[in-house]
Length: 337
Image (cartoon, rainbow, N blue to C red; front, side, top):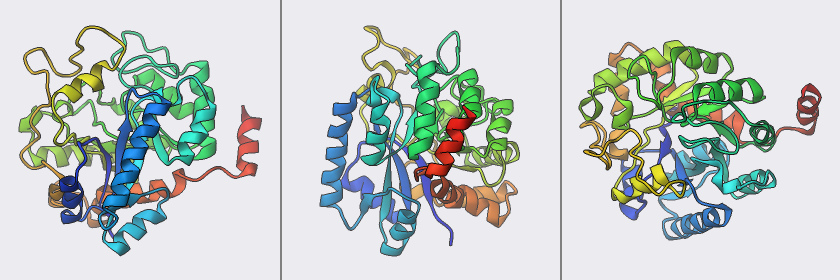
């Protein structure tokens, strides 16, 4: 069985988008439910999702385990897995890691571009690595089955997360910097370390992460995917489009600025182009996801590797990542520390 999974989207969710997921045959999506929101504000986002699950039960449902991807395929629906792009949802309380996992969070970034209580973001001038709290939170995330996501983190912080984590980490939406040197993309050395540790890379279609930006061709992107497979490994690469569909440009300001500054931060944009860039012509919404397969085959990936990138690799990663460690494994982890 070949699954179709997108490892990261942040859209202006609606019935239209949920129906497009079904038209595209998408089995599962990891969705960002929170950026700079506090714990209580994140709970309000979960309440919104609960209403959508109630309103559109024939289209979507909340995913918690890899088995839910199988259920989605069997019942003709899309499993929605929650993620956070910042640790703001746990505030300064390590106990909220388990609470968030219980509520369904399955991925959490340690940073969003800036320094956080846990690690350094990719936009900081100095990357100081994991903080003391960062190491403690990674250990707790490992224990409960909450995936460490380093998509917006600096290089040193990411390498330290790989080293400290006893379970494979993920970079859910980024590309090799050797293909396109965006601040958010990752060095070849880091990607090799990620692969050697069993970690996972989701490849982004967001124009700021692409060679030639919005003009990037499908074949160029798929050639990049073949490079990523060589760097990370054929079983450790998937798709994480970073699709930000139907959002007004004001949302970009919240993503980049949050509450941390009174001035505008343009991130990878600019004063001349402060909003969302146009998506490449070959990917506008979930109905376009399956067509990437043809480009991957044209880039030289065999059928099994292509199936892995399209979703089977994510499915396997979900299976080993979302459950709590056994008591015996937890004891071994504490002993190693």
